[in-house]
Amino acid sequence: MTKVSSRPNPFLSIWTKPRWTFDHFFQARNGDSLYGWPFLIYGIYTAIAIGKDVALLFDRDPSPVTRLGATIFITLFNTGVFLLVLGKIYPWIIQKIGKLWEGKASINQLGTVHAMAIIPYTLELVYQLILIALDLEGSENPYHALLSYIIWILNIRIIIIGISKAQKFSYGLALLNAVLAYLPVFLLQIWLSSIKNL
Image (cartoon, rainbow, N blue to C red; front, top):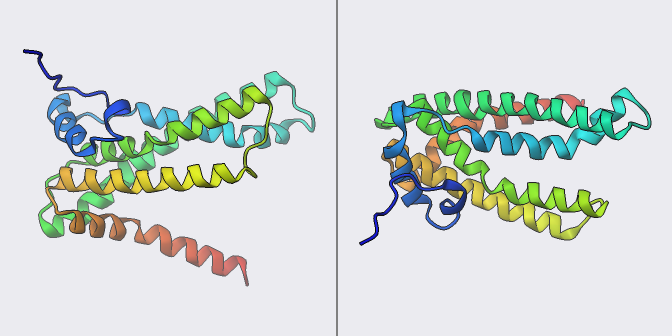
């Protein structure tokens, strides 16, 4: 009889077994630590996406070394920002709102939920790396829009399931918890858009 691992590899299991992944992953985490690797993946993806534009700030015709340096800098910066915002700040807001319904999650558990929800963006990273290897521009490709939509759906699905598992909520209450936590950001975006249009 084979022994089932109590520590699943979320990069493999989160796609098809998110509930099982969260159940086992929360049980296996020592000291309620935050799972941070996906934030680095997201940092690399966003750095590749905007690294070329940042390199242009330093040189009108940036060398490969300048582009690489800009990409590394943005990777480190973005990883830190995502780790802070998605790993600590949003989870803190979700936790505080969730206490209205006696939510059980810790900040690090909710940060891990966001980390797991970032994993589908590895598809975007692979897509970007393929484009770089083939020296192509992909933002205008209609398949890129479809890929982005699929990743967005996976991201939302994982967040709702993760909040549900961490907070011990139903899916409906988990969705409400997430929406109320993100509401200030939506309102801020609307306010900034209105200022821009004045």
